[in-house]
Image (cartoon, rainbow over all chains, first blue to last red; front, side):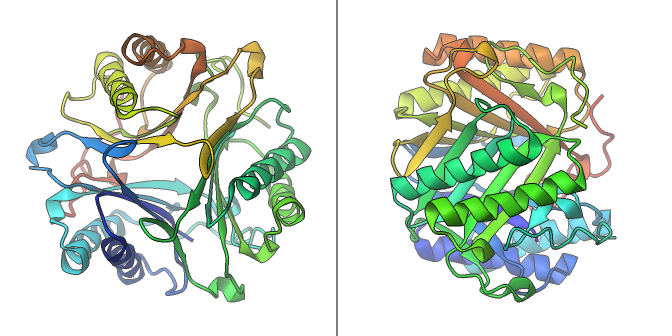
Amino acid sequence: MPFIRIDALHADSERLEALGRAVHEAMIATIGIPVDDRFQVLTSHDGSRSTLRHDPSFLGIDHDDMVFVAITLRGGRTPEQKKALYRRIADLAHQYAGVEPRNVLITLTENEPLDWSFGNGVAQYAEQEPVR
Amino acid sequence: MPFIRIDALHADSERLEALGRAVHEAMIATIGIPVDDRFQVLTSHDGSRSTLRHDPSFLGIDHDDMVFVAITLRGGRTPEQKKALYRRIADLAHQYAGVEPRNVLITLTENEPLDWSFGNGVAQYAEQEPVR
Amino acid sequence: MPFIRIDALHADSERLEALGRAVHEAMIATIGIPVDDRFQVLTSHDGSRSTLRHDPSFLGIDHDDMVFVAITLRGGRTPEQKKALYRRIADLAHQYAGVEPRNVLITLTENEPLDWSFGNGVAQYAEQEPVR
């Protein structure tokens, strides 16, 4: 169910693929999504008419080549799960794509079970409780 | 007021236009948005440095050429409205763009009336109640 | 902390940069974000396989060359802050990028302190209260 957008600068298709895999595996490991629950938009920006902007030093973190990971998911994950997710994404992005952990920005946006249709025009999660 | 991003793989401009039309007409028909309330970002991905990733079988649905529809809208639509919206988007995406209904992923993110400015730097919905 | 996507049609890199700067300075001035708290994805669409769609007259506003600004931020800003933010973004987009204020669409999506990681796999705002 998570729907994910990953944005990176000057990434080739291998790096994009590695980033997508890192985020997907991190979600399986830390918040228990099914292995086949993958819906990702992966975008490399050319730095000109499509680009990223960031400041090099927010919160004292020395950002250079940032990757932005924006995740939409059902509400209900615990603080511990979210923290474990961030840690794992940063670790796997480093391991698979060579991205420095300091350069991974992650943001979550939560919604409700009724806010999803996975195909066939049906709200497959309509009768489910929020994840807890 | 809905703000919509539609992402598809290898779609030409006609298909993108058809998808945009399908989603817009579905929202008019099922959740009562005004006919001129259309704000869409339509993106075709080339499969290399800009691409989509999905699993072919989540929830037993045989996904192949997926289209992702991400809708930001004010909170307050009923479960019945949301279900009707999903059904109609899937139907019209099939009718207008030839997309198989099983391949349409839809996700909603709700916000508040104060979270919108439609131009001139004004919060046009500031005094409105959430949609019910 | 705000994470921002700006989408414009046929914008060159200078215009994109000007729009990014306008939105960033508006947020510093009106909702008090730190000057180095900048995380933006700036995208110019070519009008074909990547494009924007809008109606020319929603709410009686004469839209032509629209710019979409989608902001994800922690919840808690007051109505006065949000209104000031919209006003300032529209003003600075005009001043810096020559965009007519009527053509600036802004939407906010709020989340929680725990929904952010700014690098190193850490939830830096985990112990903070929502912004008030």
